[in-house]
Image (cartoon, rainbow, N blue to C red; front, side, top):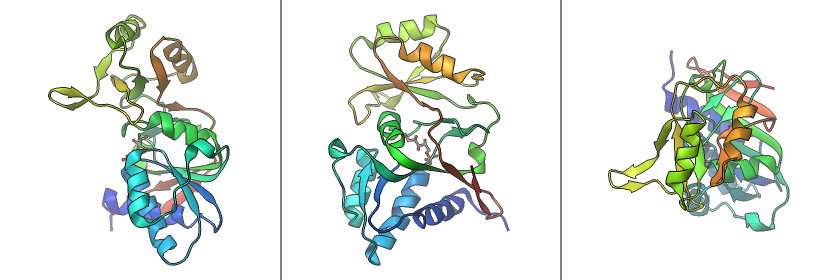
Length: 228
Ligand code: A5P
């Protein structure tokens, strides 16, 4: 029997929520897969699990609030025990591309402040080389045309993400997302990242390097396997 993608995501959410222990400060990722994690965590909290959480987006914050997970102010946090989040692409090195949900900057702040970062992905996210889909880049609205011009001159073509026909998508930080076009194979993604963040107006890229502790991969046959 083959599982539908949302069923795989649900399994990933359950398995990752089982990693949470009483008393932990937990980082909540963003996206459809991370939502299943939050959903499972809410169920555990309703059964008596005592934790606190910080959220990587307003969307995840709202979901946790509605489910009764006590939320801690990220402005007061230096260290998170465990963060669980999804990814858009993951390479064999466990380097990632994130940000299709627009939360890449906050997600990276949580990831880089976590003692353990567990990434949950279905097998469609596994790639040999990063760059199968878009690379999201968060840019500030001020002077965005000049910023995009600089990106283009460096060879990064793409589009400013739209919310709808007449407006740009705005992140929780009040910024825009420039999605670098696919397919582009990032053979040296760390070099691309350095070049991109050197441009004034670029806040961060969706590349995540050397941050992952474990990956939980869900397969269509229902297996969920740990990968270091
Ligand atoms: C949010 O900004 C993203 O980084 C998501 O974590 C990533 O896009 C994965 O999302 P899905 O689980 O919805 O595929």
